[in-house]
Length: 433
Image 1 (tube, rainbow, N blue to C red):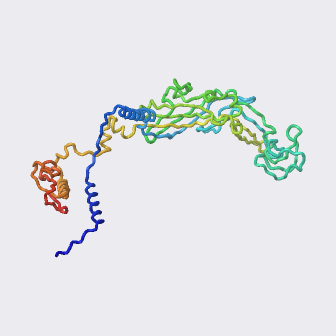
Image 2: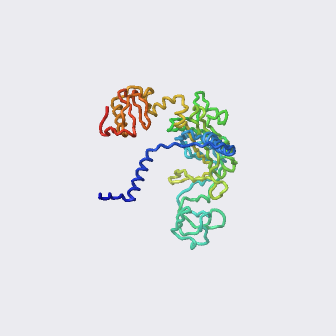
Image 3: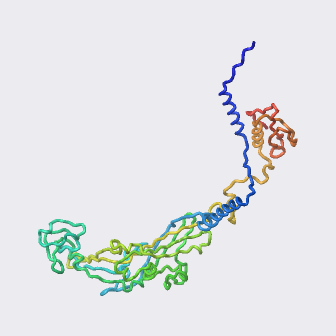
């Protein structure tokens, strides 16, 4: 009696079946199946959703956002300014060298409209300002010698002295005397200031698109000598009157000149570079930048001094200046057609596509290939599975699948077909052809 064959464990058999099933499914070809539902109500909902999506892309994405364009924000920019004009105060004529600070002509500058002058200050001892905290006193005991207040004007001597006017007393300090509040004189320079002219030369550059432009018209007839800015007729004459700037910012010139303030001149270069350069124009807007409704931080002033010698003694004139500070701010955005638009609609799209893509010859595979291609093709199909040689052009028989290579790219290659019944197998490690 023959010995019974050992049975394969059930778990091993199941694993093998699962492996064979997975391997067979790996080579399956899948394609989606479309089911057409004849239902008018469902069709209306479907087409409505499609229409909404289409409107979103056409109206919002393309028209509003212009998402088909490549963008560059924040152009490289330079600003040069020049102020001209003459004004006068109660007893003096002021020219541009005196009322414009700093004089370099940058994008931020100040035009002085009112000053408080403390003349003939010298180093010595005098009464402290009453505006300084704990400066008032009744006797010397109220003043501590050597005390230094960071918000005061000097070093206290320890003496209590009469104030500059009135019956009050303050602690004596060693400082530039008299102190500012004791002998300052106010002068208003804003009488002719609305007629000051400001030339703003601005040039921008978008490096990503290699585009540059300026805000001055290129003319040789002395155009800038007799023009002033107008949004329609003189857009490229960037000469603005100070009164016009303050008016466009919605401010009262007299009030602003008295307390000072900060005005922003915003130059916006939003350019669609798909169009000609003449369509890329600057847009000017004006607004006040300091918070005028907050008393603690509204207004604008600064101090400076002029030094000189009087009988060998160093003397100075302290000036507290109120004025209108001008901040020229440049921003913008350049946009240009992005890649797929270039490939699709540009007049020279064939040249662009030729640089971007490599194409096979139009007569491929009828052109004569190299022997290496023929050998690679034969070896690939020889390794596919059981093979059966068939004459070129012979009809396929049931159960056979394959690729007919002759007489196309390799005329000497016979037709190879896969046969489920053939036991012939080409060696996979052998080069053919």
